[in-house]
Image 1 (cartoon, rainbow, N blue to C red):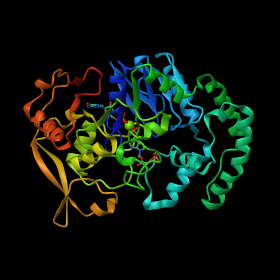
Image 2 (cartoon, helix red, strand yellow; image 1 turned 60 degrees about the vertical axis):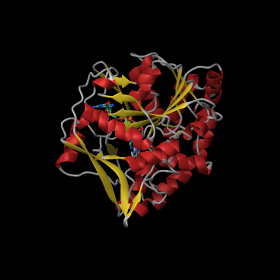
Image 3 (cartoon, rainbow, N blue to C red; image 1 turned 90 degrees about the vertical axis):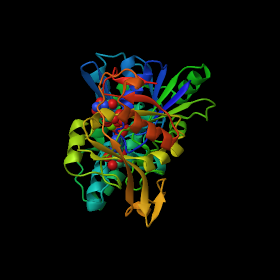
Image 4 (cartoon, protein in one colour; image 1 turned 180 degrees about the vertical axis):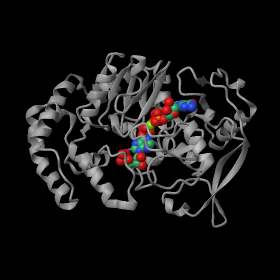
Length: 420
Ligand code: GDP
Ligand code: IMO
Ligand code: MG
């Protein structure tokens, strides 16, 4: 299939990095379309672990990679990430001129807003993502095409800096420890380094698709962190759902494509927000430790809970999933009884899809189906070799969602992947 979309179906960290790297072997182009360095995508090759924040996860397969217009780029992070990887992998990267740039005031505003919200904080990654996308919508943003043009950059910083400084100091009482000159010096240097990567990604991707090449679209975050369709306001500021790829790159609707939803065999969430199947206590600790559920970007412990089919049914609809990649079932190894949430019980009624207003399910109870536990060997190569109990768990999910699990991941490494 010429176009394959990789999307997170839960609250992020489902294993998009691993899956993208796996599919990238057969792809020609790997493209990020939204989010920024709030993302942390892990790829494990042999004994090495790589964490990508802005670079697409197809890089280690030696594939051409693109960062589309919808991505919020922190050039400090991008240049660092390139430096870290360039001795090991060939970097063939294109960056769209329209992509917006995260400026130091975005990080400062992110921190100031979170602290002003107190108990109601979102628990953002602190990477300036929200303020950067806000400025894009408010038409106060700086784009990549301006970052790489010294004169223009100087003009834009001069226009925006005094305003941002005033907001930070006078509204939030924050200390501003950066200067207009300092920012220009640092950012114009970064712009010079990144200039050779400027290329119209909308054209690159459209041409690749026209030529029948395989394009892999790598989503960041997850369906329920989507700015419109997630658990607002506890969401990110971009569109991680598959539709976000069209506006995030600048391509038309496609005739043929696959949408692979990455489903973690249980649920995790970092930051605040509703989590109906959340677990606490010893079992939660066990899953968190075994699954190494600590944020790739911020190191924060992730909240953990049972698999939630209400969320997933909704994710099937919102993304038009054609297939599922199930990750981390091995983390559940040895747990005697597993639970899967099939619906929420609200005032005597069963709710099967996640509502637009999450307050409506705040006081509902998850309805669980119980499964016998399993033990998956990490090097299992064939679906038929999986224990019957694991097949039952996976089969039930497929039946309830009406979408086949095309990949079962049995460990973090490339080799630990069953393709059906
Ligand atoms: P992403 O943000 O969706 O790319 O996911 P992250 O990289 O933030 O988190 C997923 C974590 O799970 C990473 O540490 C991966 O190396 C790891 N991982 C991915 N698939 C599997 C799997 O099937 N089993 C286990 N045990 N770990 C996995
Ligand atoms: P990947 O791509 C998990 C969460 C934050 C917070 C909310 C808003 O690795 O799956 P933001 O910094 O975007 O304004 O934070 O979204 N969040 C993620 N959670 N994985 C991610 O990315 C995330 N990116 C943002 O924890 O709750
Ligand atoms: Mg992650």
